[in-house]
Amino acid sequence: MYNPKSLVADEFIDHQEVLDTLEYAEKNKDNVELIDSLLEKARPRKTKDGVSCAGLTHREASVLLACEIPEKIEKMYELAAEIKQAFYGDRIVMFAPLYLSNYCINGCVYCPYHNQNKNIPRKKLTQEEIKKEVIALQDMGHKRIAIESGEDPVANPIEYILESMKTIYSINHKNGAIRRANVNIAATTVENYRKLKEAGIGTYILFQETYHKESYLKLHPTGPKHDYNYHTEAMDRAMEGGIDDVGLGVLFGLELYRYEFAGLLMHAEHLEAVHGVGPHTVSMPRIKRADDIDPSTFDNGIDDDVFAKLCALVRISLPYTGMIISTRENQALRERVLKLGVSQISGGSRTSVGGYETEVRPHDTEQFDVSDERTLDEVVRWLMEMGYIPSFCTACYREGRTGDRFMSLCKSGQIQNCCHPNALMTLKEFLMDYASDETKKVGEELIKEQSKNIPNEVVKNKIVGWLDDIEKGQRDFRI
Image (cartoon, rainbow, N blue to C red; front, side, top):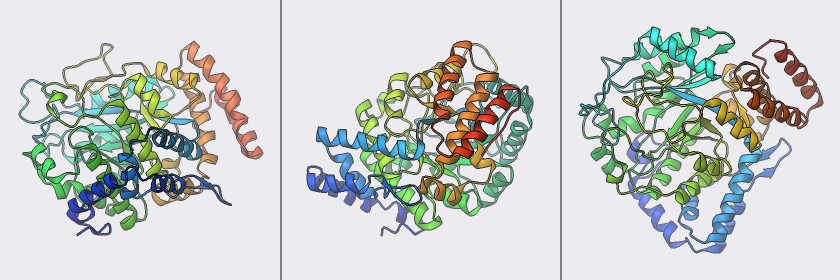
């Protein structure tokens, strides 16, 4: 029985509810009156405090996903862009993954780290090697990372992750520092989530992979990840452990995308119903080629048009949630979906264990093929040339604006009063410390123009002064 307030996975991701939703969507995919009413419902509206958005339920959004009327799809894209601008402006948050270990005891059939793969060399970074990786990331200009690790309670116990976080946060190299470490590790206990919280975790990220339970069990035939309910209920344990920023995601291509989309939104609705705050982020990965993995063996791959539509509808349905796209996707596709609601992207990423320290990109321990191999400097310049503001900001996390506090600011539209100035200041730091001459030239012009767009004169004068201070060598100003 479907119950979004239940703490049992089979009830808040109820299989029959998903099937009923898909049937309803199919019946109404040409219902123009309904489609127009949903688009109107989701449109941003000005309030006395700023801007608000109603979002869409999983059933409402599924109708739009099923709709194949070209002019209505174009309206969806326009609305997604409008919502993105209302809450995120031109900012794009930058990050990079840091792979600590590829030891894993699970048998996931879509991941090269599965324990039956004898081709891939197994590697686990020592704390000294982590230091070298972090310095390499800092020398690129990164301030925000996502820790990645396989599931192995012997090789990668929680103590190893905690020690690694302590190491990462301790390293100050020249003007570099990792100011936010998000963590993407296997589902664990409330006690372990409390330990991660105490260690200063940013966002806890866990991909569901697929919400279709029957498929999930087949795709995860062995190992602790085989337990669908334990995995799906992980976010509730994380929140019970004090982590109020959590990130959802499915691996598109494993199961029918309309099923996954409904399940993803149901999970977000569940978090909102139980904890009063939905996901901080939603990641949008597609299955990609990797060692021992051929994506063509999976029957549910999606093309770029469907992927773009999914991104747009996630933005429309979850207007306040950050949306992430990684270097799994190529430059052209990333450019396309940036306009449709994506708010965070990786740059200069390497998906190998120990991949950053070496000049030549290693491929032997990659989790997936990287489609966008440009440097961070090149990605930053590319974004600025399109009019975006690459942001290295971590201020909300460090000022305690997380969970419901972040969402309340975002839902009122007031978050832009913090994020826009902070983005400009962290971009200025990047330009001063890491950018090529060409990138610096483009960036200085962008900052000059964007500084004019700060509406509050007091804040504007303060930011102009701090930008001058950054020019003189001071760092880490934030609102």
